[in-house]
Length: 236
Ligand SMILES: [Zn+2]
Image (tube, rainbow, N blue to C red; front, side, top):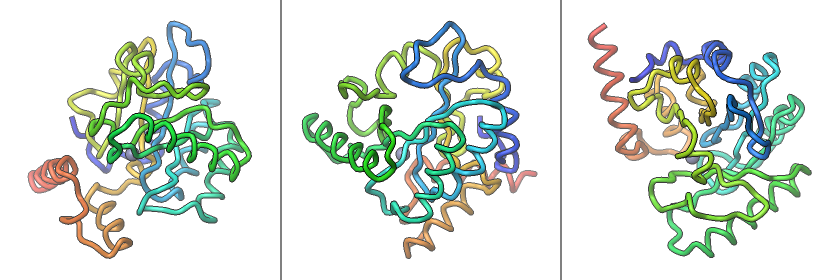
């Protein structure tokens, strides 16, 4: 099911998470009903703050996983302000790591250690949670990160419920139903997708920033969602 993009606002996100179980941190002992809110920051950190605020207003805690190497943003003033805001709201900072081009596990583990340490030094906060960018490209669930938590380990991924808003597409799930009926659930969302804009507008802005076109930039999955949203808009 693809939620109409007009419904994907920060206010709507607030109403959605209010339906779920109480929130916990990835490093907590999880009771029978527990929600882990995770955000992968794949686009500009400026969208972190409105989401962080809405969670904090409800007394909920989330983990924001930031990338160190990405063409879409840099660890600059904008990122620094966003991280300060989320930490101030009581949330946790994690690492979002792109292992998609790495063949060996050792290379991934070394890279995670290097980038997590960089975030720890820059933001003076422990990085205890790691999520992987494009986890379907190479296996990541088996990776043991030592003192850090792998959000794709079976105990957070296959052994509990998992709900994701990737590319404004819920993969046939009804998010309200999933959250209402959840026992333990990990809920992954991307702040940018809740800015009230359709995916095409988000991709157009990204493409303009990178000096490319939507056609060059979009993944096959994004192109499939664009076609769905265009058809829905045309049929309305
Ligand atoms: Zn990602």
